[in-house]
Image (cartoon, rainbow, N blue to C red; front, side):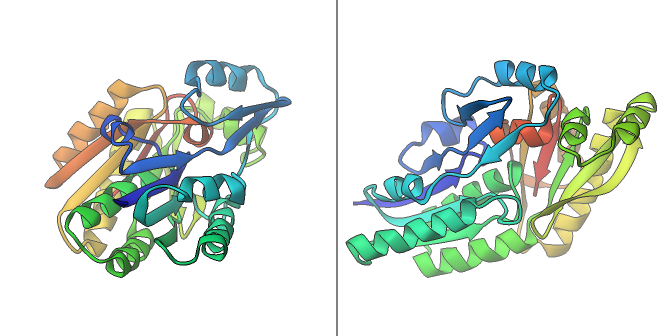
Length: 283
């Protein structure tokens, strides 16, 4: 049997290296629902087409979590130790589905492997950062129990912030009134959102996307330093704006000493949350 497997739901946006390392990483897709269409958030997801559908739709998109059976299939792999990282349980039933699947596996197969299900209390770049953190612990040779405990603590300490280029998805899903959205667009106000114990909340705003991104980086680094137990590492997820992601990486590098700053393209679920041009940062 293999050493370990890190299984994310499809809100774990994979870097190129993570996607290539199929022995260490795999994902279980959520389903995207928009105007009567059901789209699997898997390797066939077409971001450009989905963004166009979102723009044309008068309603906001929604997501459906994977079934316990979907996770059960993922657990039936050749790994001894399995670490499952899910989107915050406050936004999705994915965590519960993964836990049910773990119990089903033990009932059917006994405890022939270890399975930890970890609520990231985040999403997007937060899950990416969690996945890379767990792999680092695995490669250091820590025990399954040690890694599980450290991953749970990391989920509590993780700092995840978003900056949105546009707020149409928030308006369509009812999280922002049409009047507020039009007012913000007129004044070029860009919100800075953050994950607060698994819930998405507004932290601040700034005029222009550039100012919002810099303020987001300043805040995230400051908060991450306050809870860090070692060198800083960051993950950036972008929705259709790779140059913007590189600019954020460069700015971050001047704020603190980072061991690594990894960049990933948004998959389907993250495309819904970040919207076209959005950036998600997790440290």
